[in-house]
Amino acid sequence: MPTKNRDKYSRIKPAIEFYSKKNRAQMFCESRTEVGALYELEFDPTVRRYLTQPDTFTYRRNGAKRRYTPDVLCEGIDGRFWFEEIKSWRGANRPNFQAKHLFLTELFGDVLGVPLKLRISTAPYNCNWRGNLAFLYRYLGHAFNDAAHSAFGRVLTPTPIESVIAQSKEAKLNVNTVYAGLAQGLLAFDDRQKIGPWTAVWGTNND
Figure (cartoon, rainbow, N blue to C red):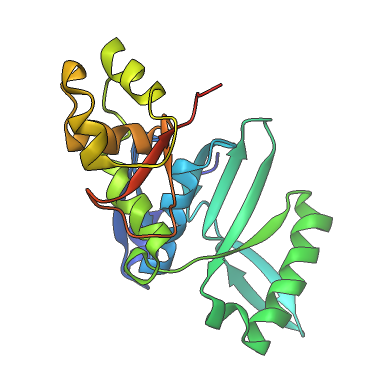
């Protein structure tokens, strides 16, 4: 993936630091809306890696020379690459942005041969789903023992986290272990509702 001179760029717009577990590197973005999108990429199993503010391109439109920096360059697990522009719903529906994005989408496809996609996102504090991703993100690297795996597999129907812990004393589960199970996909829940000890969860490997 190409890299970018962030120091030069940061004089124009302030950068927000985001540590990416998927890339094992510090990423930089310009808004909390972009932070919400990065959490989506971190949990997306079809994305192998990504790079924020990957490069700046020059182009001409309406006779004027312009510059454009995509928000993200992604590589999928299938080896394909694509760029992303991240916007809120409000920003994406502005007529001037839509005209510019349509032009750039065609330009990237025709000239670079790499798609430019639009990702609609929002700040984690404005959305339960992305807020849950932000909350669970810290648990992605948590390790499990066999007893925890077995306990998760016995949760056949939606059960509050507090009850899962109480019913699995032999596994010595605690609330952080269950949160880690949710983060790593061993347990599922209604991710549109704000997560907490009351959240109902169920195993994902049940036959």
